[in-house]
Image 1 (cartoon, rainbow, N blue to C red):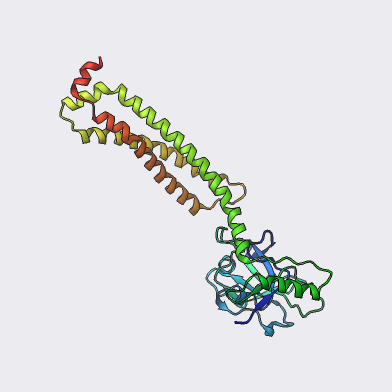
Image 2: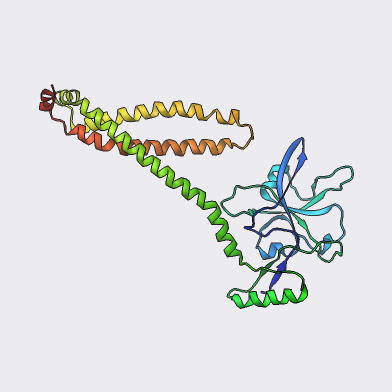
Length: 309
């Protein structure tokens, strides 16, 4: 495999920032991110072409200019229609761009970023009017060491003596981006775990006190023939009923969020998934917190009801 280099005014994957734009199709404003890349970009990043083709020399000097989009943007723009050959952004003085291909998926900000529309425009570095690339990606053979980086920087410095160059493996950029995504999640997770622990201890204490106050009631049930498992089911069943009522009220309130969302960023399916997962966690926490108080309740003997007064 020979080394391949791509350039252009693109920002490489796992790099902060980018170029954002939007277009109007059938009255709908569709935002997406865009970059300008060369013909080797798909090969360097092993992008999967699912429709049409990638850029090539046959795109030299053509109008409208070619454009490759990802599957997410293709679905947003054209739905089930074949996007290849469609014109995007055409106006009175703008010929727009012709879609020549579709890649399966591309998330420049990493796998933890939300799926979004992305468009690639062709950069022609042979055009004297074209600006020089700000960044380049170099695909090398497996096992290439750090010595290659020094050699590459030296060669670039010879070509462009007034420039400065910095080399960074894509793997290091990915690790940095993952830390950016995971740090808030880890911090939020620790805070949430602490709050859940406090809630769990408080709920266990309240249930413990409730069982102590109901010693006479539980003792009388034991006199009437209630078994240990009957007492377990009573305490846990009452707790789950109260939890269900609270969840119903809370869910009704949370379901109002899409109606008052001023920025249109709430996804209904994601909200529904969050409600279901949250309900499951609340039920699990409630059940765990109710286990020990239910064990205490099951230990109550009939004679304890007489001693209680």
